[in-house]
Every structure is written in structure tokens, then in C-alpha cells.
Image 1: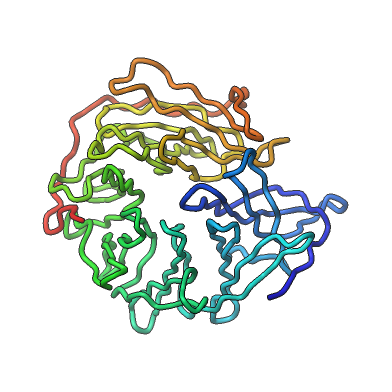
Image 2 (image 1 turned 90 degrees about the vertical axis):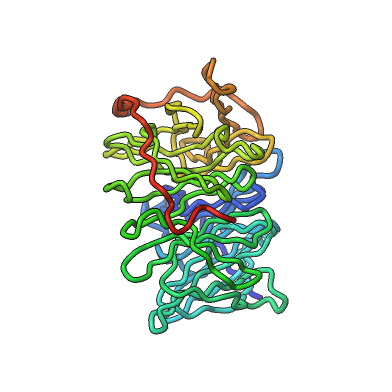
Length: 391
């Protein structure tokens, strides 16, 4: 174990890779800093956000030298941050934590692979990584935190190159990954207990089908596929034999829609679960869109200024919360009520939670107008063919 000395008080100018722990207690990101006295770049450092207390706050976790752009950070539920750094031909793992004026660091092993990526936070407190072996054309799933010996443990291997990573249940057993094999990318489900994989998305033989988001309570799945001839967002239900649907509401010309979070607690009612999407247009303008599979329209909301990427959390019996950092508010959460009961009868309000108190969302600077929603047409429904969405 070592302690790394914090140098100076750099000012944060940009954050990336913002990730929220599975229980919403902590978050972590890479923060790009500048030195205020010289105005020079201070490099990248890990930063931890505390979200579970009476007020959100951020703590910098600088290392002995600036982090590289490809470094990943993952917040753990105990307040430590797992970091993956590439060093020569290996990927070193360490646990970072505040230690007085310093950053405490505990090395927890290394992984070897042509591409190594930490998976999104897993339910239950463990952490996992994907390590692609180019020579063997397979991807190993490794448990990198929560192991008996404190070092990475192999869990299973999946033929092909795997990317992404979406948890399908609240037990941390079923993991969906996007597997590239024979020139096509298809989402497959991996059972970490048995080591077996099964097809999850196989909409057409020639389509690339990637899973983007899963809401375990309702079984709602959000995916992106080019089965229709262009890359489009679609939805299905885990365990259902109904086909994937590609609603026109999720096809807005000139706008990139990215799923952020889905409303939990909607047991057996995926059509009623509200999905939050980040809407981006060329030039960097962004907005928040709320949508239900049972509706034919998007509900547009102003996104908080300084929204940290397509990040957000939606905990049971809570509001949607989006992390942001802007101006004097260096660590904030914007809270949004979902639209009223379907069909919508009122406009949902938005607020910002800063230092544990709610206030009205401040006036936002003018943004380029989003394109008008296209006229409603019938859903384009494609069969899942060989692989219905099954648990």
C-alpha cells in the first residue's frame, strides 16, 4: 500500500467517463485540470463523487503522475475507486481512496490482453472486466474486485471480441455483451455462474444488434440495430417472444438519441417504464428526452448545463437524477419527475439538487432548436428469428 502526494490545487475544466455505482452511493470520473497560477494543463486525475450523503461533493484522487486518456475508473460501494491503467503490454489495477491530503493506493493485480475494459458497476458490489485475447480470438470475463484472494479471477471465456456490457438481473449473474464474430456483432447473454453463453439479439442474419440498456424489474431492453437498413433504436422485453419494435418516436432526423436510464419498479409493465435519453445534435447542443414504450411521442426537457455525458441514475422510489458540473456548482444532481401517468395529462417539472436542497432549474443559455418530431407512422416490427428475447 502506498500514499501518493497531492500536488497543488488545480482547477477542473472537463470531466469524462462519469460512472455511478450500482447503488447510487458514489460516482467516479476522469477530471482534466489546469494549474491556476500558470494556466497550464495539469493533466488528468481520478475524481470521486459522494452522492449518498446529505449533499453531493467531489474529492480529487491525483496519482504520482497524470493519468492517460485511456484510463478507466469505476466507483465501488465502499467509497474506493477501482482504476485501470495501461502500462506497456499489461493493464494494472489499483484501488484509490482519500487518505488525508494524499491519495491512498492499493495495487490489486494486472490483466493481459489486446483490449481490456472495466464493465459497468455490477449489482452486489463485485467488479468485472473484459480482456480480449487477439491470438485466441476470445474474450475473458474476469472478476477484478470481490475475489477471495484480492486478485483478478477468471470467470469464463466467450469466443470472439466482446464489447459493451449490460447487466440483465439484480443479482449480478446474467451479463449481456456485444460479441463480434465472423464480421457481425450480436448481443449474447453470459451466465457467470455456469460459464455458458446464449444468443440474446439476432434480429436478422446480416444485422449488427447491440444492447444498450436493461431494466431488470420490467424486463425492458433498449437496443440499437441496423436491421431496418439504418442504425435505429428499438425495444423488446426480456423473456418475451414478442418481436423487437422500432418506434418512429425514437427516430428523429439529425438527432443522436442515447439511452441513459430507465424507471425501476415497473414489475411486468415494460410499456409503462419511463426511459431517459440524451439527445444530441451537431454542434454539441443537447437535451433530455423522456419516453414510454406504450406512448407514441417523446417528452422533451431542458438538460442541466454541464451535464456529464450520457450519465444518470434512477433508483427505486426516487426521481431521475442527472450529474452536472457548471460554474459555481462543481458537483450537482438535476432531479426530474417522470411524465404523469400514461397518457400524459400534465408537464413534469424539473429541478436541481445542489448541496442536498432542491431549487428551480436555472435559465439555460440559448441552444440550437431540435428538429421537429416526424409524423407518427406505424411501428416497424421485425422478428427476432432464431433468438427470441429469453432469460
